[in-house]
Length: 115
Length: 144
Image (cartoon, rainbow over all chains, first blue to last red; front, side, top):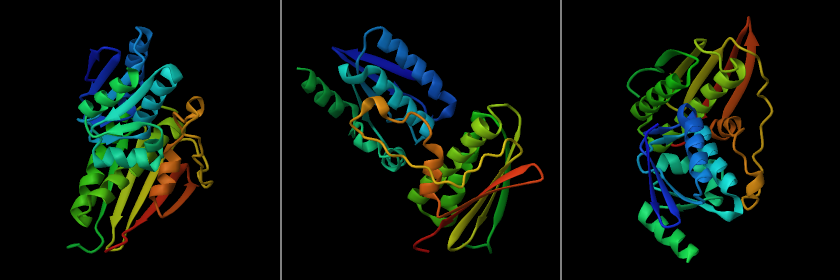
């Protein structure tokens, strides 16, 4: 799995550089995110700009991250294309996550919430 | 559609790496025949979820088992048949995905696949014959 992390203050930006976020990498993603949470990250932006397709395993792994940070943290999502947005809508996860067109807007909102 | 009800048969083995091959292929075929990106994306989601379910529940994640798929393209509908030789699990009961979006502790992390298939497809049936399980799915083409 190819992904990058950037820590800006209390916010950890995770950019997944994969075309497909599916069952093949969902477990690896969860493990990587658990490791970040163990190191103290609680506020995440999951940037899916490069992702062209997501299945329910990929989506479920983002839900896992939200459940792991619980009410002490938050998970924002950015950069969803139409297909990825479709998955969030079909499962009604668009009501669970705050979704932003790009990582910059997500960061401004999350950072404001933390001030 | 420039060919009368074309049909294609695809076979992969039960590995998550191979599911993406089916997904990408079906997506491109749907775009080619129906020229509708949203439709192609929806079908890809349904197909991928169905294949993932076969690997996880029919073959219990065992590698190198056959998954057969046939797609038949009609002007007004797409017929998909997905077959495997694993454990039969009745999929005739439409699953629910009821949850409170504010109740973080009880958000679903899995179990969404069959819900998605039911919601994407217009008709769905499941049968077993001679050790072969077949999930038949139909998606209507609303504006063709």
